[in-house]
Image 1 (cartoon, helix red, strand yellow):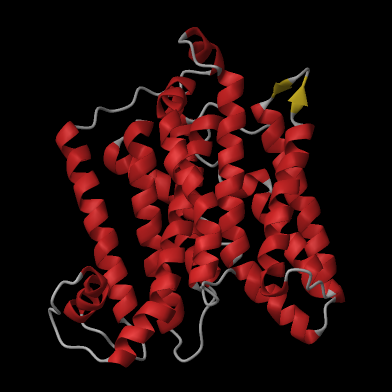
Image 2 (tube, one colour):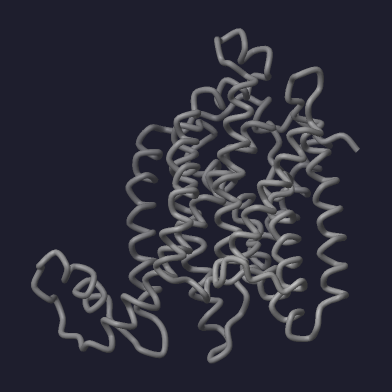
Amino acid sequence: MTPRTDAPHATRPARSVPALRRTLALIALPALLLASVVLSVGTGAVHLAPLQVLSVLLDPLGVPALAPYDEQQAAVLNVIRLPRVVLGALIGAGLAVAGAAMQGLFRNPLADPGLLGISSGASLAAALSIVLGVHVFGAYTLPVAAFVGSLLATAAIYLLAQERGRLSVPTMLLSGIAVNALCGAGTGLMTFLATDEQLRSITFWQLGSLGGATWPAVLSAAPFILSGVLLLPLLARALNALMLGESGAAHLGVPVSAVKWTVVGLVALSVGAGVAAAGAIGFVGLVVPHLIRLLVGPNHRTLLPASALLGATLLVLADLLARTIVTPAELPIGIVTAFLGAPFFLFLIRAGRGRSAA
């Protein structure tokens, strides 16, 4: 089956979105993210009211407390909840921006970072390290293995997608599907060979979790994730031109091949770091860009930063649900995002059939 590269949002004339609507969206989305962060860090076994949360956050700046709080509440917020929320926001932003960039690059509304095999490559490497008992880097062995696995999978796809020295996007998609299947089979084999304890670790890591978030984990993942979040929007003009097709973009002076390599490299870096820090979290890169496209239109100058903001908000709220909905246990966050994303994926398929029949 050959992937479609003539996505409706790429080939049909885009409906004009009023500038006021885009401006309001870019004002509302940061406020929504801030509200979700305050709500998330304040909710749990130790409750903090919004004014107490703001008081703890503003204390290092010397701002007088807006509401009284005790040392236990401050410690819970600063040491446990805040690194978890910050890591979730970073990973959500990275996945959403990567998804938006890939959909623009492939001109396919179903493109997702998982199609490049990044998540499955990371999963296989992590499962290998668990089953083989590798502890070379101590507590960082699993994230390092996942990151290396994601890079190796991406490098394999780069090589497979080469056609006469050029990077073929359709071949890259097909290669991604093949690498996904191969890595999935390898992960299945590791699951079969794992002991009961190892099987539990593999399962929770595959489903994703922010439960192990610490400030060192945040600081180690942030530079890689932020490289994608901050640099991919700089390619907005090129991605807009690619919506006309590669030939059209080349006639507009866009270095198409260089843009392809840059986008894929930044996506691999950002998503690979996210997967290494919190495991495989699906559907964020698929759902968020579509929601933002409905809100602000297909212009990547607005689409990419708005996707980052909504992706961060969505994952912060999904993590809040994951750690509170079955208290005192914790639900893997990948299950929450799958419940949100899978119905939307089916909606896209149905909508695509409707347009084809029209």
